[in-house]
Length: 110
Image (spheres, rainbow, N blue to C red):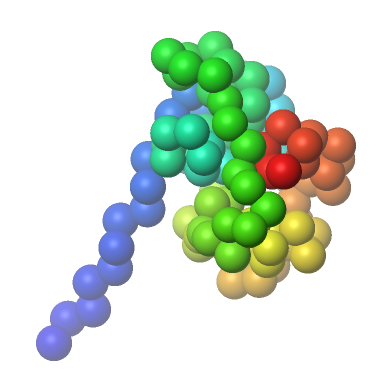
């Protein structure tokens, strides 16, 4: 029986490449997209959501950090919020994440 994989979710907003980089953050390590709690859509960053969504952002509640809400732009693996916050690279492909994203966690997660 052939293996069929689930297609990765679309990433909305002004992306500049296939690894989820956007017009705001596009260094080699800017390779994640975040599923926004308010709409369930993936965006590369808070600015992309602010500029293109038709509603204000809402942060993920602390008790829902076990849910998958981070997308690695390199291998398209979805990570739980807890898993993402506990690492500096993708557990599947080992691509490095931008450590400076930690400065913005309050914009995404309670």
